[in-house]
Structures are given as structure tokens and as C-alpha cells.
Image 1: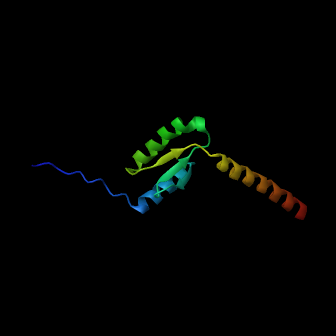
Image 2: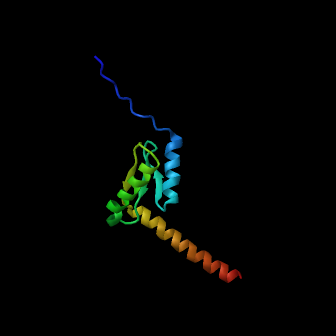
Image 3: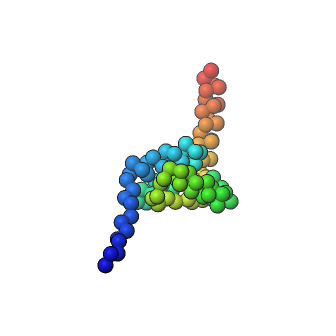
Length: 99
């Protein structure tokens, strides 16, 4: 009787992609997690609580009401980062040798 049913707002894929872009532009590493949930990968585990507050502020400014995630870096993330650094050093050496 007179009771309103609250229907949650539908979050479109374009909204999630927009948030992914906005967070990336803000300097965060963002991946689309399970179920296409934008997930921010913090650079250091110790910075997660500080980053979470900043991310919530950005999402609020963008009026994003969908799900999002924040996680600490995995060991595999660090390996990928180290491999990229090693590869860039190798490329620098190759360019110097070629020039």
C-alpha cells in the first residue's frame, strides 16, 4: 500500500568506460575486473586508504553510482612492471648501439 519500490539505477558500459578513462587520466592504473567492474590498482599497499578517499571523491564528482574496486598490487603486477623497465633499458642500449 503506497510503498514505493526502489529500482537501482542501471549503470551502462559506457559509464564504466568513462570512469575508467577519468581515473586513468587522474594517474591511476585501472583495469576492468570480473563483471566489468572498474578496479584501481594502487601503486603501494600502504597508500590504499588514501587512494580510496581520492577515488571516491572523483567518482562523486562524476556522479558515478556503480560498483568499483580498489586493490593492492600483486606480485605478478610487480613482475610486469620490472619487465617493462628491463625492456626499456635494453631498448636504450640497442638505440645507442645503432646510433
